[in-house]
Image (cartoon, rainbow over all chains, first blue to last red; front, side):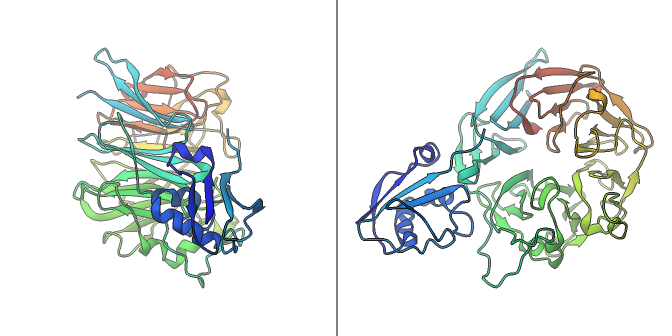
Length: 89
Length: 370
């Protein structure tokens, strides 16, 4: 199965444990995860389901290509990392 | 009952409590380090709603049921799915308007006849209504889907937004909203239909043929006199306007010193001819005229203004007071004033003198008496 892990910065708002997830695309992996952790969805995706502007998802070391629908196909044992660009002040 | 003052800042929420000796001290803090963009303490209870902007993670809502001692995340206003064939372009940039909450800009409790309601104005221009005092939100489609909504443009922000929601105590079916930039919109049927009512407003920075077009008006803030609700005051990018007919039309107030430019306005709760403003250098510089911070008060419906400065810095002040950072308490005598420099003052006797509560807060976005 694929695995998904989240930035430490998100954990102070909503607990997002590393987990195994199933699906053929990034969108399906995220849906699988959000079904168990519904509060996490709004922190990663915007109102239209697109990846939030300052968020990033890496799939086996490659940046997500389809930030709108997350349709990127993934290998059965893919490793996803969800993190944010650090900015602010 | 002891009074409280809620202060939302770039780095957290602060509750100041008034002691018996009249001093105000911080009694509670929350969300330290996080931007708090709007705050709504509900009347007569312990419920408080706070809007947070987490940047990367989006805009969120937090609810307290115990006066700010503890908080839980509640539903944030969210836009419905944007149809694939929807053409919704920003009129200036010709880029798609995002149907997603970019900023929770203002929160208001409902009309007294609808005590369970709350209202929320957002960027990019959606008005949301809550039927359960902030536990859930629904976009007011009648305004969002109005064809003229697509004429709205950003003022200081990249996208248009709703910053003011005001009610008419005499009519539970009437709601007015102020839009930057998009004029004033009024419903008299609880949001079934909406009408543009910025008639009489003027933008001297716009091309001459657009100067009086209601849909292009950059209203900065609206405030109604609850005791005489035909009187509504508007601080506008171009100046100060006064309505004598519940917002159906507007009269320009000219010649205001030291400046007619600013962001906030609060109306006296009972006296329609009294309102307070915070003037600043027009228009992109935005600091107090000559570095002297004053609050401008009129007591004669805008014929004359008194610049109130006792207790405020008289030189080298570069404080800007945002549109939600000026409030008057229910007594009509006690003001609160918070600035981008992190200064917080309480004004006594209608602003005759100001007392500093802090000079070291983060930049202040919004404040409210409770």
